[in-house]
Each structure stands twice: as C-alpha cells, then as structure tokens.
Image (spheres, helix red, strand yellow):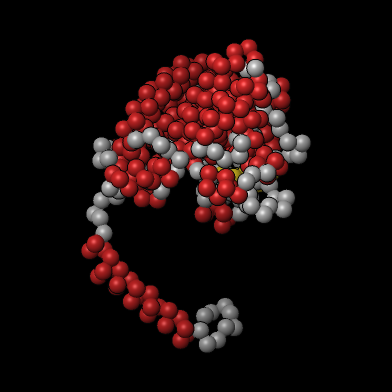
Length: 374
C-alpha cells in the first residue's frame, strides 16, 4: 500500500476481496433471477409507501389534485414572466426563457455565497416581522457552506437536523452546497446558487421554513411519541412549502417567479411519482417535462427520476400534499374566525404542535385554536 508504512494488510485484503466476489456471485445466482424487471412497485406496496410518508390519498387522487394545481401555477408564471422580462429588457417574456436568463445572470460566486445568503435571510426576517407572519426566535439562524463530503453526498441545499430526543442545545443549520472554482477562475453554476432562487431556498430551509420549524420544537419541547412516530414528510415538507408561500408576496418579482417554479416542481412530483409507478408515463417523458417545462437542469431532473423510481418511491408527493393540507386548514380557520383570524397566532400554534399528521393537526386547529380566538 504505497504512501503509508502499513504492513500485514495483504492477507486480510485478499480475504475481503474473496468474500466480496463470493457475495457478488451469490447475488447474481440467487437474487437477480427473483428480482423484478421493472422499477414499479406492486400497487399495494406503493399505496403503503405513500402512507408511510404521511400521504393518505390514493395515487389517483394525487394525480387529479396535482395536475390541476400544476396548470394553475403555470398560468401564474405565464402572467408574471412578461412583467419581469419588460423590467429587465429580456427579448422573450416566456417564463421558460425568463428563468434561464435569471439563472445565467444571477449566479453567486462561491466566495460570496455565505454572505449573500445571510443578507437574504436578514431581509426575509424583516418581512416576517413587519408583516407579522410568525414569531421568530431571538437567536440568529444557522447557515453554513457544506463540506466537500457533505456536498458529494447531498448536492442540494438542505437542513442539517439536530436530534429531537436528548437534545442538549444543538440547533438546525441551513447547509448550502459547496461550489467548485473552475480552471478559468469562474465558479460552477447550480440551481441552488443564483440570486432569484436564493430567496425561496432561504424561506424554505431557514426562516420561516424548516429551521424555524425544528427550532420551535427544540425550544418548546416535543414528546418522544411525536418525535418517533409522527415525523413524516407530509408534515415536515408541507410546512416548508407553505413557508415559501407566505413569504412569496413580499419578495422581489424575479424571486416570486422562481418561488412559483419551485412550487410547480412540487406539484409535478405529486403526479409524476404515481404516474411512473402506475406505468402511465415513461422515465424519459417525465425527465423531458422537468427539463423543458419546469426548466430544471439535467442533473436535477435525473435525480428526481431516480427518486421516484427506486430510491424513495412516494416520498416526493409529500411536499405538495402537505402544502395543500396546510392551505386548506388555514382557509377553514379563516372562515371560522373571520375578522378574528390572526395569521401570526395561527402559525405560532401550528409550530407549537410539533410534528402531527395532517388530520390530527386539523383537529387541533379546529377544536383548540379556533375556540381560543373567538
């Protein structure tokens, strides 16, 4: 083993290599002949996967709701994009072309990335306070650049979650993927690191999204039962997408367009995932839709296809499903309270519940929050 002074490794290494060869041969002879030749799960298993992610609707219902939402969101984008194009002097007002222009002109260099995200978070926090969207903690939110290893393992912006049980003061951190500096001195470009997209990413992952969501649980406490059994993608990601929505009206117009683009992607997830698993669309067709109509990069689209087909089938539907539940619940609370509805009180109450499945959260809001506000 060159470069080290380690000795005696040859025999254990050969033993390990032999075991791996034997295991590989066993997989080929015993497992592969019994494996499915199609990524699709049996219908009962796919429906069970949805429930495990917190999605109680059937695949058919998901497709119906998501395709309707997709068209509504796209129509909003078609109306907003020409306004941005006129302001910026773009040749085309088609939302696809406008998004491509915003990505090309707004990339943030790697050495400026952390400072810019801190600035955007500060602006969003001012909006949250001024518009009384939700109560913020006194301490600042944590944002950092991921290590090279973290970026390789998770190349998208995400939240580094602390433990909920036995926490001794650890808080969540918004992690931004590390950018590489290219040979010509420029920085690589991604869907996570351009100006117009940074606003919605910050609202989703930091505040008023996931960082606030998990900080609230750490500071007020969450029962072991909720931390262990109630944690699912619908209640976690539903809040993240809802947080984007309540911040969106106050963002710059170009950031509003990208916020809608991200929401379009979440709606697409909720129909593409079940359609792929029902055999109603091919992976190639789904990938083409994402690249051409939603305007995401090829790498992102490929990751999505892998996610739906074999990595975590069903999980991606939870974002838009949880969001729809939150929007519906807010509407019911507003109807019940009318002029007594206070969005800050509503959002504080929701966060104080910790992690609850949509139906149980609905009962808490209608049976506890609404009567307390009358």
